[in-house]
Image 1 (tube, rainbow, N blue to C red):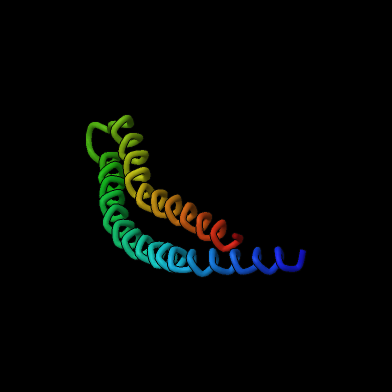
Image 2 (cartoon, helix red, strand yellow):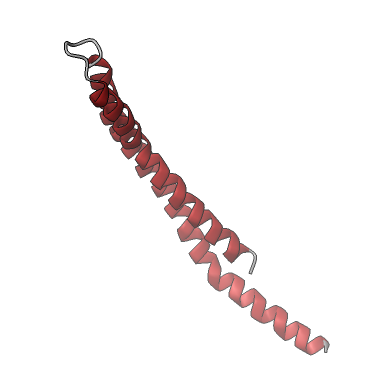
Length: 104
């Protein structure tokens, strides 16, 4: 029985050592996603902000178009938030995979 536990421990240790580079690569990938997500977040945030500013500007022009205002506010908000959503989803998925591999 002790020999089987020793063999099981050795196999478990070999699997942990084999999966360690995968965890390191996934951790680096999380940082890459954060960096790229931050850049895209700034770019899309500016574009979404300009769309929202254009929608607000439409309230002060004649004739006032409420439909354009609503579409601009919703569209600008979605465009500004989309990269952050993708970044958070991808990061959460990778962190979940890293946790699963760490518990092996």
